[in-house]
Image (tube, rainbow, N blue to C red; front, side, top):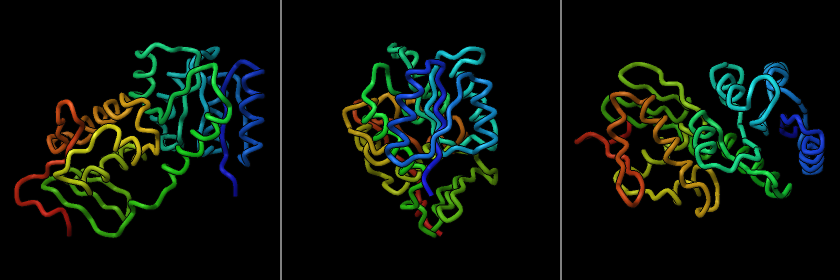
Length: 235
């Protein structure tokens, strides 16, 4: 069964262009022209990914994204922001709210199709779901169940945050550059959007609470997972 992509844009020409190329690539495509319609369609049809414009009538793309990440039915749906806004602050805000990727208009339709495929592979990829648990002090990563627990409390992570944490934990003690993390977690070219890693790390640390100190910033290089002394990481 092909993946279902929801395209949200109030410009008919853009919507038709994106829908055409995605359908040509084999995706099932649904469209919406406003923020409220996007939320309704997302809950009714459960898309695998949303291509979301920021400038929408009524609810903005930011508000739609924030609402999606707060609702159980849509919190794990992939989101690619598609917008004419080029400012870094806009990109950072979108990524901090939980977007998986960001593409600026005008864009090449072929690039959008490739980015959709990359996000869907990352969200659906089972490669990191080995059976062993990783235990580091108060932090438990259950790779079989895709669950993260800190001091007995289940932590809700997005698919991207979970894969980022597991990647760092499996490579514990070794510095991972932003380019390496982009290639592994986002399956992206190492030269693009390194700020994406920083935004997701910030959110991940906030969610991990007392276990956040294990995520160490190595200034000028990247990040390293440093478990507590004596922690072997397996159970």
